Image (cartoon, rainbow over all chains, first blue to last red; front, side):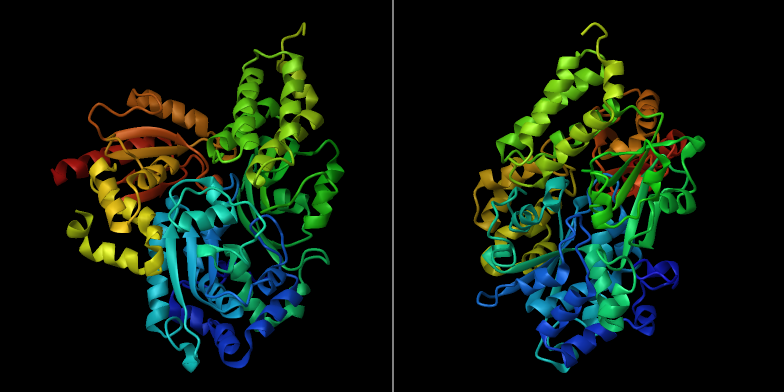
Length: 418
Length: 167
């Protein structure tokens, strides 16, 4: 099947304006601006079943329809802060198929009445930001951005904004704070960005992959998009496959593809032909899926079905853990990540990740007792439901499911007579 | 100072944001201030605070919060190796240890010639191409993927040579 998002794999040089144009580029944007009302665009996206690809899976069209039309101006912010350990999909889109993403930004901006859009890239994507700046300039020169686009009265400017190495800025309200020139710390919600966003104005924040779907949904229709994937999760998804597999990488597949197909058919199987012990389907923020039965691998990957395994599909950053890995080592890794990235604003997350990191370290280094493992589980559970944003919540996922589902790994490393 | 040194860039940066929200320019201006020396001086922070009508403390809080801003002079290039979970599953820790051995420094230290500061960092979104690191230096941030210690030593030699020529 031809790619919907990673189209550069089928069409060489699609990063060049004339090649993108020759392959239908900007026709959807032109049609929207010249033939459709903004709310009609939103309606198509709503009907397509597109859900946010950044991790939360919130219906995109519905989010757009929440924009407050009594308060102006409006903004669109594209979330290109891609920082979840295990996620590297947005990067490939921006590096190789930039115009489809930018057209998605433009269509979203038209749909919600924004005349300015910001692309927030993580600071490490310095070269990608420079590349996008070039592409934006090419679009301006060709009349796809700027004033009176396609002879209409619609105007749009797109700007890039670089972060500077803070995972938390992927959280949408922290991202808005960061663009405003402040520390990237999440806001208390509600109000949500569609009513109170950038500079206090109505703002739609969407992930890069989400926006990259939009031009083809408009060009081919909602029914076309819904014909791919499952009833719960329409369309295609880029699965970032990493960990102990032979061929890690991005694989664009319809929702409903099984873990087995992803890992064995596309990923070439597990390194050294070992067994899959656990899967983290949403990067370091994941619950650990226990693979004690081969049948688990036949689970179709869509939002609802992965939930039946006690995990979330999230951004579909599938990290494969084989049977050489001990889970006490793994959670020590993930907890240290979250401790480092906690923004410090709310106490449960700031203190919780700190104390969890002391416990995971002690356990991993063989200095702990059984009671320490129970204490760790207790601390993690106390954090749940109390943090200001999802970061704190996510830091507990691998800890709780790791201890509950792989207790034997912890029993092996604690002091024997405890 | 910044305005005198990079008038065109400062103007371009300020034009990105609504004039009544020029504080938004603090992050790009900090990158600009850091370009030449690899760190941000107190004078540069005062300068940016004045340009944007915010307090020096506000600027310092941004420098302190974000990991890609530095307020101390260290190596000309920062070599930032990812050791997060997906990279660690593909040998990143061993790579970093061997690199430390070859360079004769520990993580967080700088080579005696002042060329390289070695750092361990969190995910760089290149998990499928581990071991991976980025170099942060006067020419911006660059990715180096599917690395080996030998390839890294070659890169360091090249950096050494280009630095020598620049002098």
